[in-house]
Length: 125
Image (cartoon, one colour):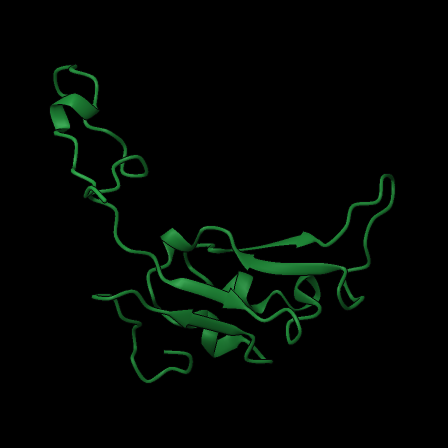
């Protein structure tokens, strides 16, 4: 099996003077992202709780309904009607605020190699 060889930058991006690709397209410069898992069996009413949503300075988390019924709004207090997930995990800075505020310990963060959570004494690391 052949190794993936990196394409030279001059072939990868348009040859405009002074053009630099945006960071979200340049995977060589992008930092490794942690794997963030939210246990939906513990986090049953994320829209009612919203503690991780409010605590995260980078707005990594997103809540959406589990099913869509046309013309009807879901009940935010009903267990299982909404679920939370780390939609923008690449924005995570590893502050650990979400781990500290979660009342049911539903969030788990697995750090990639060379990346660690701050401070290191928080749960989940």
